[in-house]
Length: 408
Image 1: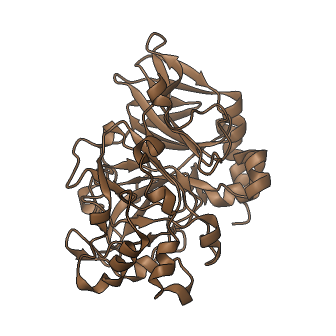
Image 2: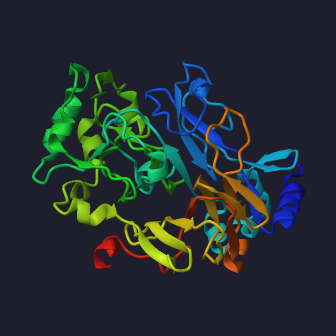
């Protein structure tokens, strides 16, 4: 669209640096929706049963969803300014540092992260996400990710609120190779080599690339790198067969039948880490504010992966009638999960139910300049106003490290 630059500039001028975003829905053909996304019950298969149920909502995304038979813009967030619509990806491409900040624009030339709500009725297969070097072999990017389980969206745990992560210490590579060799014999038994952790609303995890994990059935807020690569190492889940193509799709074609290569692709030390929970488990840590002030901003995703801060996230809670101004070190995507109020000049309203294609007032993207100058949030409702927001690389140098919740 040739006039995106002028439209985006005008929108930012009108709102002092904040984009209003429309909901972005993503289906998965191999999963069953958990039905906690606030989507209308009639709309979970709005794209057709052949595409699968909608079990994800993506936030401030410039990352295409890697689905078969997808629409060209699937996974991409749209900015809505009056009667105009354009993708956030196009706005960032046109305005560059004005939207995402000089340090991110100069290094990546794009918004390199995104977040989502991930919502399923049951668990998904034990899988890993390739690292940057592995993904580059197939023209893609690696994918570290993180989890937070918002209490507002988890009134029920659904079928299996536990996540298998990593492998039991002492597991051998040959045992995992043997599992892949048994792919077409039914359940290949890889979960026998792993351990499940009970998922608790209001907590989270930081998951590096090449570490196996089988996410459970809590609705999950997932700040992550802007990629959709994965390899599934479990052949059946809840009695359903997993196509072997979902194991091999993001590995070089000449390695698809090489089970030893596929196992060597795992971060072995990371998977058999005897202190796995201590290395990856997160609980909220207060960043600013207090109950006395009527608002509290908490870190919910923090820590480094291989020494790099790739993304972080916070949860802001504001009591009724309270207003606060928050400064941050970088641009961010915001989703409201409870209450109503205002962010700058824009209204915030948490919907009870959303029709597919309907516009909402719960999601915005705050540019780096606006974040640095400070954004004013106000609770105009009768219950707490709560929002989750995630940041890109190196935006929060003062964020805590994994384990910080134990030192409070």
